[in-house]
Length: 131
Length: 121
Image (cartoon, rainbow over all chains, first blue to last red; front, side, top):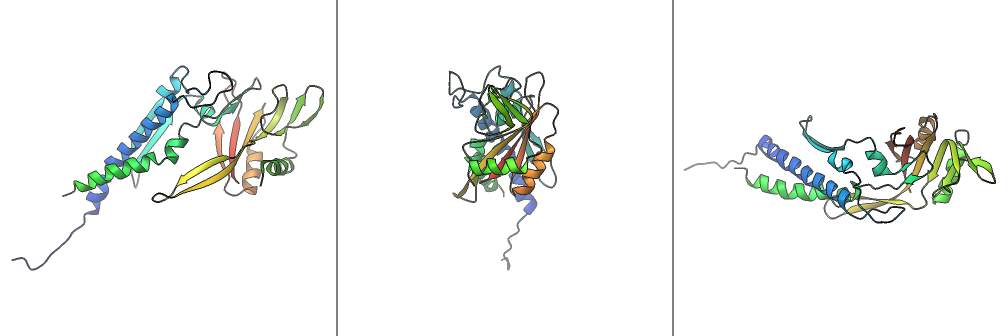
């Protein structure tokens, strides 16, 4: 009969099990960002308004979500690689004197804790699988 | 601090950096405006636009808590080859907690160089 009782925590195993949920949660966030771009919710100075942010579709297609190794912890980046992405997100003054309204498509998903909520769910499941 | 007070403070802070507005039938004035400048006004040099309405930042905290913060939005616009950095430096030094975002200019698309500064209210 054993005369002792040990519990051993393997922090590498625990932290390691959170990497995939972290990236998956970011992928959920990335999809939410893209949904915002196609949502007909953005004010525009002329009709139709509100409208989506899809004109040619180039901005939406330019999205890249990347898993990065990062040190000491993994990182995940979200980027839109068009020359006018920031002008759309933050609004802009144009040379002809007119202005583009800001359409910050990342704001609401971040404020709604999309990442945190998804991570919590995915991490719980992943931690539950540790033997 | 109200948007009106902020506009007045920025006008004083940036007095020797501001460009000018030319408006039909009016004498030229410093290029700083609260709200959207009239479409027939033409700016040269550094233009500063202060948003009439504050923006809201809702920062998630632990659990169900969040922190709702109002911010002023100030847009610095370069009409012509005018540097924005001196104005940004003065504003950020004066208002702690201010953050910046750069909108790169694009000649082909007609987008002017501009920097947006968010100042906690």
